[in-house]
Length: 126
Image 1 (cartoon, rainbow, N blue to C red):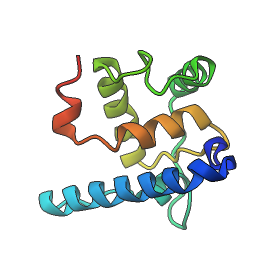
Image 2 (image 1 turned 120 degrees about the vertical axis):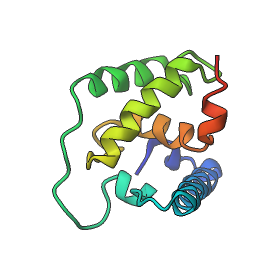
Image 3 (image 1 turned 30 degrees about the vertical axis):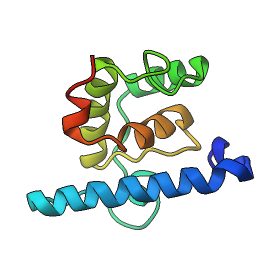
Image 4 (image 1 turned 135 degrees about the vertical axis):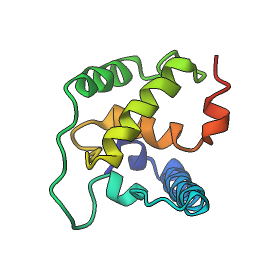
């Protein structure tokens, strides 16, 4: 269970956002003719090949996100740092790495949130 899911008032909202993000990523990939890892698989659910290990610097990124309690790396709003870090994490996920809310809760939460934004929107972050 994700920490934010322990609050019944927000649990439904977070679940809906993750589902919506997964659907958007799937639709974008279908448009480009690509295969992607869905939100459930990215969170470590389902069967398949063994998960690739997360890069060591992801633990540091997770620690920063947990310690700050902020939604984004720079605080309350997304920045270029979020977009760059997301691209790196997303590449790892596409390569088979699994983000687990149990092992990297801050990173998992942040990844789900940033994934809600289209690539074109992330490209405009300052």
